[in-house]
Every structure is written in structure tokens, then in C-alpha cells.
Length: 559
Image (tube, rainbow, N blue to C red; front, top):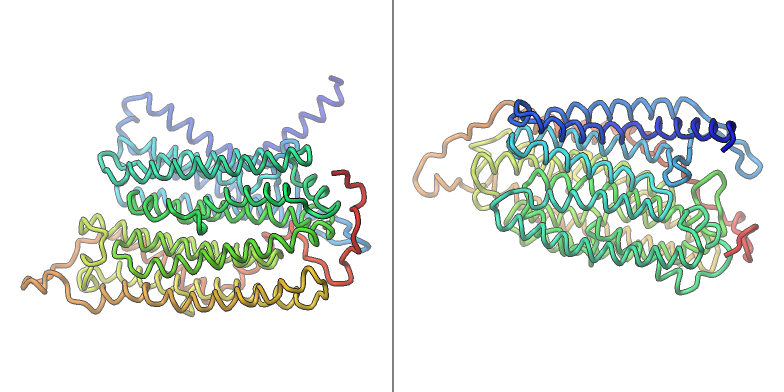
């Protein structure tokens, strides 16, 4: 190896590691907590604080990367116009991508992980003895989810999914001595193994067909001509693997049982972080195959992929949202109800991805931030009430507003936001999704292309389905509030005077803080909308009608 080549490799490795610092901090935290377990003094301490501190440090580093990446612009030439975009780099020999989309998802994942660790410290699950194991699993899953959001190669997609999944299986069965928890973990493992096998088979079909797993190369080859059945089958199998992580119908079977059997803290983590990482991966994969990433858009790939990807994502989104909302209505266990609610909201977010446009993806990023606070708030209140009442069943929470008014009000804000009630963050999030659907419907309808024009009415229909599902969700969210606010407490029914629950001040502060963020984000949502738009500037806009290629092989493509 020549000195010049060695020096270039050292420089490249240094740049790659610098971009990878947040994940390295989490890995350091995992090693540190495992080493601390070797010393009796620390083995008896709650190491959740170590995980929280290291996660906050990684979050601050990531936020600094966001500021730096949006303050230093590189000139890019697209067509005949010179434009400016924040830095977008391929790191570790092209296996990962470092851009605003990656950084935005890191901020989302690390911020949420810090809040979940805080929740576990407040609820006492896990205890001191298991705190290191629990924290290591949480941080390990977060590293895997971060890799999912930045993957640029099929093998990295698989590694990221498995790194996120394996700790999640253990977390689902973390409640020792509880049969339901063990059963939920077993179901999660079985379904997860099956989905991973299907996804890996799809990847092998794509890699075998084109001789590469590098996503930009796959895009170049797909632009070369019509997509044969082998390509379509491989892409469908990969999307099935993603659908498992999203709990999209019909790959949702594990979700209600896992959420019911696992601790509410784990349910909160899986419902938000797992969905965010999976949605980021679907966006990276579908927009990549659509040729809308990289230095220059490949509109031939977009024209070939859109007639298949848009209907597929539309169908999954419609089925997932509709099933989740209707199945949630008859639930009495709050965790199971929130599990079906999670399925429904995964469908709402898939609606934004179904547009196959950066605007739809930006709406998904906005939705994710709102979903973080409202779903975490709902699960947090369930965890607090479980500690106070010993139950997670709705009928045991009758008239709870007289015994724990702060928690009930906070839960009400979260549920109404999940419903999409203005002026809360959930309303702004659904407005963004529906607006992206409407604009994309107009866009496809006006293209004048035989293959693409039918996609417009399809997206209009998806918009109607989304609106109807919002009305359906009203019934089961309001049902929870009706039981807690309007019905008499069980003690009063049995002739006893209901006593106030001893809610600690830190617990009330945590719930109120999440509720306040939901209210503020629903009123002042322009900054979040701008940050979401900045997060997708690595993706190009779909072409106008006059930019569509006439057909034939893309230049240089050799499938």
C-alpha cells in the first residue's frame, strides 16, 4: 500500500468516524455499563443514570451536527442550474449515508430514548439489579435503528434491522416471572425470524439479479428498462420485512400481544422508536429506488418504479389504518388499545410515503415528532397508573379524574392529539399528511402519462380513507376519556369514598411536560415544519411532465 493511499484511507476513516460519533457514544455507554457491573459497588446501583447521561451527550453531539450541516453548504450542479444543499456524504465505503435525513432521525431516536430512560427511572422498571441489562438493550436497539435510517446498502439494511430487532425481543420478555411477557417475547421472536427470512430472500433476489446490493447501483440498473417479475418479487419481499417492523397489516399479528405482555415502558419504546426507524428505512429505500436521491435525480428510475411503489404503499397504508382503528374499538386493556392505535398511526404515516415525494416524507418526519410526545405520554400515564392502581384495564380506571386529575388531563391531551383534534400537535401532523396526499394527487393527475396519471385518483381515495379513519378513531379515544371522567369510581359504586391517589410530583411533572409540548407544537408548528423540510433535502423533487424521459435505457446502465 502506497503512503498516499494509506494517508487517504486514514483521512477517510477519520471523517467517517467523526460522522458516526453519536453511535460510538452509545456503544461506549454499553461497554461502560457492562464493565461497571464487574464492581460490586456499582452492581448495586441503578445504572439507568449512566445510560441517560450518555444518551444526552450523544443527543447534544447530534444536534451540533445538525447545526453544522445546515451552516456549511456544498455547491451541487443539478441539470443546468447550480443549487446549494447541505453536506451529504457516503461513509464507510458507501455502506451508510450521512445527511440531514440521517441527522434528523438521530435527533428523534436519541431524544426519545432519553425520555424513555427517564420514564423507566420514574416508574422503577427495571429495578437496580436489572438496570444495566435493560439500558444496554435499549441503547443497542437505538444503535440498530440509527443504522436503519442511514443504510445505503442491502447488507446494512439487514444488519440495522436485526440490531434493532434482537434487543427488542429481549425487552418484550423483560418482566421476569410473568407468563404473558414470556409468551409475547416468543411470538415476537417467531414472527421476527420469519419476516427477517423473507426480507433476506428478497435482498438475495435483488443482489443476484443485479450483482450488487449498493442502492445507487440498483437505481441505475432499474432505470435501464422495464422491471421484470424477479425484481418486483425481490422488492416486495424486502417491503414485507419492513412491514413487520412497522406492524403494517397483514404483518401486524405480533403487535397487540407483545404490547399487552410487555411492560408499558417497553411498549412505548417499541411503538415510537421502532416505527420511526422503519419509516425512515422505507423512505430511504423507496425514494432511493425511485431515483430521487444522490447528486442528480434519475427520472427514468422514478418513472419505472412509481407505478409499482405508489399502489403498493397505498394499499398497505389503507389496510393498516382501517384495521388498526376498527380493532382498537373493542379493547378494554389500555396497552392493547394503544397497540392497535399504533398500527393505525403507522398507516397514517405510510400515507405520506405513498406519495413517493420528498414533501410526503417531510410530512412523515413532522408526524413522527408529534407522535413521539403524544404516544409516549399515553404509555407513560398507563405506566404511572399501573404503579398506583395495580391494573392496566380500563374498567378499573372509572372516575379516575377525581383521584388523579393531573394524570387524567395529561392522558386526555395525548389521546385527543392522537385523534387529531385542533389545536394539538396531532392535528398539525395529520394536516401535513393530508396536504401532501392532496398535492401529490394533483401532481400525478396532471402529468399526462398513461402509467402515472391513474396514481392521482388513487391518492385522492387514500386521502378520503384517512379522513374517514380519523372519524372512526374518535369513538375509542373518547371512550377512554368517558370512562375516566364521566363514570363513577368503583369505590363510590361499592359505597366507599374514593381516596386520591398518591401521585409523586416528579410523575406529574413528567406527564404535564409532555402534554405541554403537544399543545405548544400544535399552535406553533412552523419551526417543526421547516426542520422537517430541511430533513429531506437529500431527496429530489419528482419531475414535471416535461422532464419525463422518453424511454429506453438510462445512460450507462448495464443490468
